[in-house]
Amino acid sequence: MKNRLSQFLYNARQNAARFMAGRSGNDALNRFLLVCDLVLLLLSALFRGPFFLLALALLVYIYFRMLSRNIYKRQDENNRYLRARYKVQSRIRLLVERWKQRRDYKFFVCPSCRATLRVPKGRGKIKIVCRKCGTSFTGKS
Image (tube, rainbow, N blue to C red; front, top):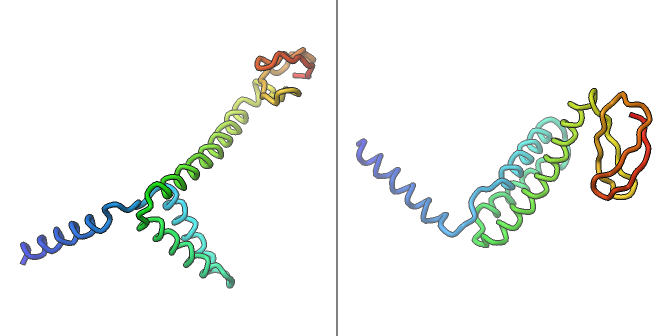
């Protein structure tokens, strides 16, 4: 009996692997969409509205992406998502770092090139020179 069950499970794994060969599978964008889908399902359970239909449509799109054989297009979508996520994460990281340094430093923005400049606090009115473009301006630290 145990031998038949293990043979059945082995065959099922082999069939699933054969079916998924040449398909894009699961990636970071699909995981993000799945979290969004779960949030929509939770909202549909709490409130009335189009949340359930949106969740269903999103789930269909997730399976479409997962089972798609157009791997290059799905990789391009995933790469665009990863670039956008990186931009958001780096912006959040920058804000957290500035928040940690707020007691020791004051931050200025260069009027010509928009670069962020950091100067020590408590120095009074000082002349600030941008390291990127060389523009000088005054500011109170």
